[in-house]
Image (cartoon, rainbow, N blue to C red; front, side, top):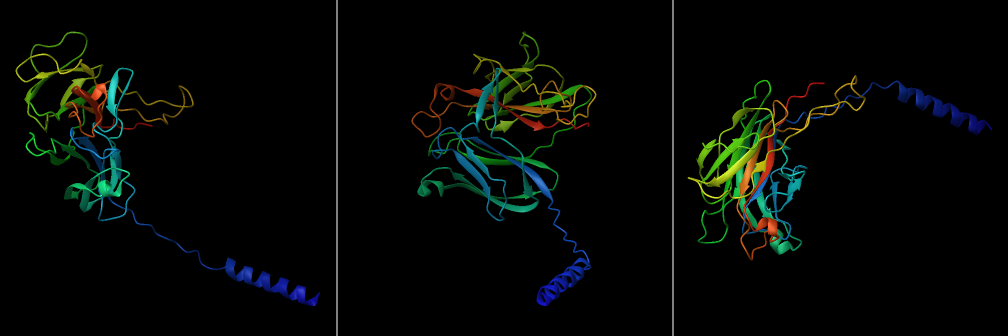
Length: 293
């Protein structure tokens, strides 16, 4: 009994001492980050699951994983979007990345298509796009483009739109609302493997008509751009807007791009379904509308 009492008193004493210790403050690093996204626009090569872009100088959870050709192009309600294309946080500064084939075979997955170093600035967004043909003698030849996304903030009731030409030939693009395709091109002779400038348009449902430069049959049925959706409240009309707006041409402050992809090269490891054996357009967003709670 006496021994049990002594042990109890000892436990109380230790607990008292422990409770009187100063609190320890642990400061975690506030990592400066930029946003990076990857687009796979190479029509004639891939691993079984496409390609990966990975930063190899630092361990980060920002790998751009399993980008099949056209980066996950998926059609819903008549609008096609490259669902794998996302801005992911990457530590700012001088960064080293590689683009690999994605495959279950290590011998294939270790093949590096591109190796590059870039300078990332905190708070800015960047696009990495691998495009052109990888096979010797085919034009345009495969190349990597890495550029900052500098989108001027659209005005009230406006959105910004743009086209990226990932095909091997120049194109004319006409942006329009309604049912009448304009005579004059919005962007004329957009060169192969280049991006047009953004232009500001009033909000609405916007379509792109894409033809060879100088005229001719449209490369595909006119493509509707991402429409987006306004912010809303899960609590009802009088509640706080806790769900952010989805970027699109009906949501002011957004910026949207249509990427014009060529067909997959027959007999290669890029997708060979009917949808990939013709040119096609796929949407990505470049700028989210500002969040207003």
